Length: 198
Image 1: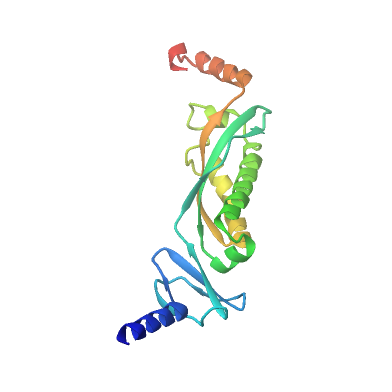
Image 2: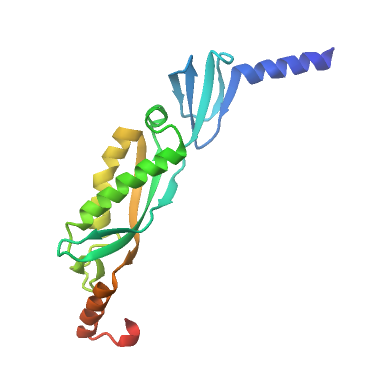
């Protein structure tokens, strides 16, 4: 009899309570409509299914590495880039209603960041990506540089559209068509670099 009572109480608790863990946020739905957002860790109460349901989201920073993307610099050179960026859910209700799940979020955010990167790259000359002169070089966290401009272009939009924070974008790989590679090598040789260093 005691065992049966314990089982009944356990099942009842399972139906009317849920836990939000560290680095999680929860959205409580009442008859399918988002009614509460909970971001603090702890034990919470809810009405049993089907009146209320709960969806939890991981709020830690995820890192996405986009595929190669080809674009033009301002001086009309083809530049192939790979952009990585971090993202984290900050508004779970908006995130759920706008993208629904992690896969959709990755696709939408990859498009947002990739499009912004292409637009920003188009405003800079090739030398700003490959120069050995620190006054010309605009990558690698340079204040006001390419990556900072990409960040400024996407940060507000990501929050407004999807409830997501983008703490950083970073160009992690550069590539060039063969013709551009030769031009860059020639410029480096002209500056005194040896063939072995190129």
